[in-house]
Image (cartoon, rainbow, N blue to C red; front, side, top):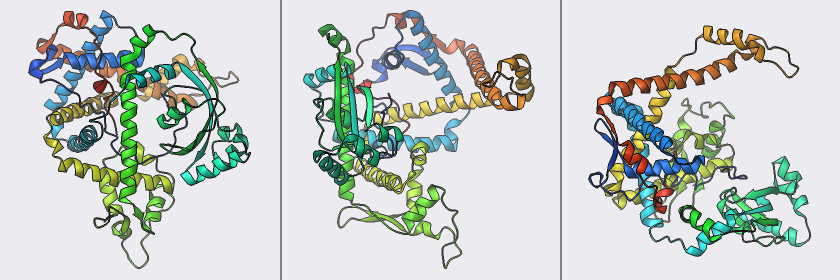
Length: 488
């Protein structure tokens, strides 16, 4: 569910972002029962149960025997694609080698979080019960946003002196809707807001203004205007949702501990940015300038080796250049890099990278690569990448010819009209037709390829459909339930 007022880039969004990659308390494969075998690969009961339950929870569909059969067949198809890719030598491709390095870094951060930050974390029955009530409560809430604590305290003082949310919102929000409605977020449900924001809002009495609350993107002053809780909450409802709520609360607490650790570490590392390298880098990554040779040199990239940021505790401070930053940034998600717009975004991005670097050093110092969960989780992450890579490759192989686009228009052209009902010319709609046909053709091409793979390897496929249908969907352990693969 979308966090409705989350915008921007934070240090914590870059650090330990690989947490929950899938390090569960798995037994050795020899002690687990296989539901299916595909060549020399197996699909174990815990793997099926975990993924199937996640699917049911995410889609809301009801469990039934036919759905189980279709789901295990999909898993078999995935194993066939992965096996085919390895047989074709994907493990020797540069992309695979790079993804292995990415996976290892994520997993080391994951293990560091588990062994250092989450090891003693507990969830109480009171916290689960509180989450149950909140999940059945809606709030009408408004807030005022500030980048820093000092700015938030100024807003708090002005409110105490009689200023209104409506007047201050016009000053603090760039978003015109929030600026014009007094920071009103409307009617919100549980898990729609920043977790830190939400935990304060759900504990506020209507009409009371909170103290400044530090969220992932700054500080907020919060006021709840109305609260609506379902009148009949039964013990039966609670019992049915308890385990899922416990997993949710556990993950919330893990994220809070992570964020606090990152903030503390960032403060201790005390970053200091160097000009003009920082400004030059910001201008380049945001496309504001075309890089020209530095004054006094013919090398247009000379600035890349100049000091950019210095950080670290006293006596151990180190300096990175833009070149150092580039080497480390390659391991981040391109979507995170694309979020860098302002100088504050860039500073946060850089801080996230050196904090992450520091934590990786700590993980290596603890010899976390020797953890028995590490190789299995690394292999699982790599296979997820191979599966995605192969699906994209097969879809890209499905081409849409110009004749197909033209034929579609000639048959259905009357359906393409503007707002006045006038038929649109072929030139105006051919791009949209091509995209639609590409989607259809690529899906058909992928399905045909899977059908041919199953036919070619049918003798090596064994599926115990009876056991799949009878498998009890026991509760997924709370430590396991929150561990879904992350793209970082």
